[in-house]
Length: 187
Image (tube, rainbow, N blue to C red; front, side, top):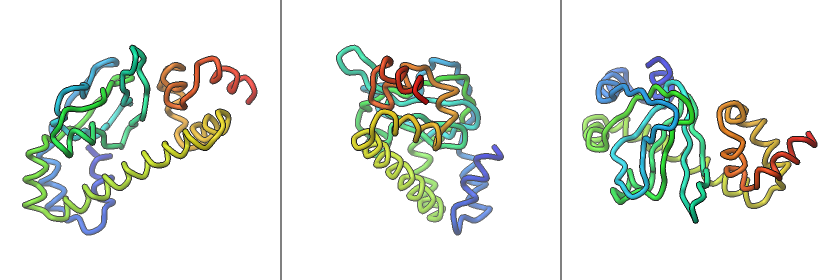
């Protein structure tokens, strides 16, 4: 829980009392590689924090899965659209290796906001980081060459290269496995 405390404690103006209360609402969970944390068509009821491991978010389109993001140790994750709107998720979240997570129920999080407004502020900062990462990924995938996308992934998130399959990386980078292999061979 040390990573969690460091992350939450890094947000400005969050009291020790709020952090302790917030921690108390999270439950520990353990998941195996391939386990689904969220499923398309179901409402996302949990916000997760990855203490150990890695996960990916993906969609299914024409019997192909398309990886849209990866989450690593020290990061929060959920099907944000579903978690916020309370509507069924468009995505799946799958553990790509054994994961130890903390999770909080949507209702418990809402109660925390009422009791500790500084937690709501911290949550807003988490959402802002999430949104920025999605926007960067959109720009990243639309305006850069395949080589630039791969090099940027190596530079900014090298652990993904170690943890994800070649197919998942290629999908995330919006390229075929063959293109990814060519890019890798030229570096």
